Image (cartoon, rainbow, N blue to C red):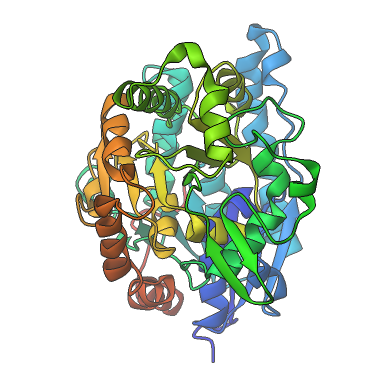
Length: 485
């Protein structure tokens, strides 16, 4: 039985629901663990996980996304667009929240973005006599300040709206203890910490699953139409079509699979390609790894990279492996960095960018050897969910160091931290020396991830922290601190 008078909840995301995993997990938990009917109001774009699409109690309502033309407008019109865009979004949100969906017991809204989301949800909750809860992922004004600067008047107005309407919520969740403290001491908002945890479909992949995944993404891995590198060298059309061999695995007989001894180390980094993730650090570290390994192995530059590639293609192994970085995600700076990658001249490092289905992404993480996180946080108070997903798949992580990252990454237990490209290169050298059999440091981190991470799951965290708050809010035990003005 649901615990609300209407037995309904609405999850509100002014963004692509397919790229909002935490809100997808909220919707699943509201349906599965609270037995509520759930309406999701969000933008489309990327497909959400099939678990949402298949659940009979979850309905997704897709809004039309605002088409951004900021880059082609004269600068004189850009302030007008900054005002017009949230006004149109506000009207659209109100239409969906007040007309398109049935009145819920509670609105659960993602923040950021704060404008116009918090205003629209507050108005809708008042008009429909519903409660509303804010799930604080970060602060919207700090993200806006990345592009406009902290001194911008738009940032100041945005900050005021975020604080003012944030206080009007009937309840609040947040992602770290550091953010909880900031909301309490500076903003006067009491929030419950709900740590991101992976759902059940994030787990280490079986060898058969790895092989089938690598068969599905062969074209993305080998890039037959792209320039030759240490990954695509020697690959023929026959190799592309052969279902019994991949870059990493072999299928022997009907049901036996093994890992290739001279396979590259697979490193995954998921990014939104935004300014708060300096992808240049990873590129510089890759160049440093490439050059340092060549120097340690006394490789003669005059021989050219094809000598090395032929040796690898012949089955030879080396003290330091090839590194294949697979970068997943979509975002505004993707093309800029793809152009930079094309200009790199690397002997034993390669990059691939791709977008995977919600079902294949966990399999990729569960098949990789290391994760890299470049998230730095505009506020310094949130944690990267991508690392949580990696831990759920048994994948150790190297992450950029910032104020509260140690709430998630335990150095020398489940991962390492770095502050520069040189430090990351040092960690890559240390972790992958002797790969795949004699890299003891990497094996210890993986063991630590498995011991710490697999017991922590989203359903348990949500049951212990989010469900009691939502129940109190719906029953009326928690009230707003500020009335609607």
